[in-house]
Image (cartoon, rainbow, N blue to C red):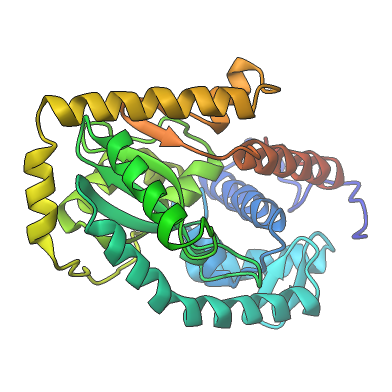
Length: 326
């Protein structure tokens, strides 16, 4: 375990802090918060990635490198080759490389599945999310998708996709995990924190150029929270076979589609309330959000678990460094 520091990081400055002192302190705190967050996933970062996920106002790359070296000399963080973390090992770096190779190999499959999703009536945009969007995939990892639909047809589109998964994929999640839907009238993600900001800025938009651009514009809060981040550049994918999709959208565009969408939402909500009846209402809403314009299916409440672990690491760092981070 790194030593507990008895003095705050950095030199003691006599008199009022200068602008440079405040900027340096903000950069140090940002680096520690970034490493604490990714430590939850045992995910080593390069110095460029530390900068990209920084919550400070764009510190210079050379400054980030210098501060990382300083934190390492003080025994606060670990270093393995080009990678940094709170307590990373060579095994963590090796696991990252293995997961990265696996992610690269599975991306063609993700694109094929995204193309199928995009052909579904009322789907307007398809993103890859989860670990694959961050360039990693464990041996038992799923391909996660984040989907945007036309307004008033989210639950119908979701039900059609669930039926496809059950009938043609034998209910396998491995290549077809669809756990988050929004509609085009409600593109802003409601939960706003380090976890959701990281998820937003790492989404890989494979289909729906106009809609995916509108989504990132509607979630500028994520880029304000992580101001050094940028939208990943992913070429637009042609879904093809728009004829059948357009036909079914005409057929289901009126009262029949409206009734089916409402029925799909109510049926799903009742099933979830029965299956997860041990959840209190607040936890249920966070993990299994069910509204006309959003469907979120995270029964293990991954967001809450990650944020709890993240804040635990921040408290530990505060005790060790004497620096306020929360």
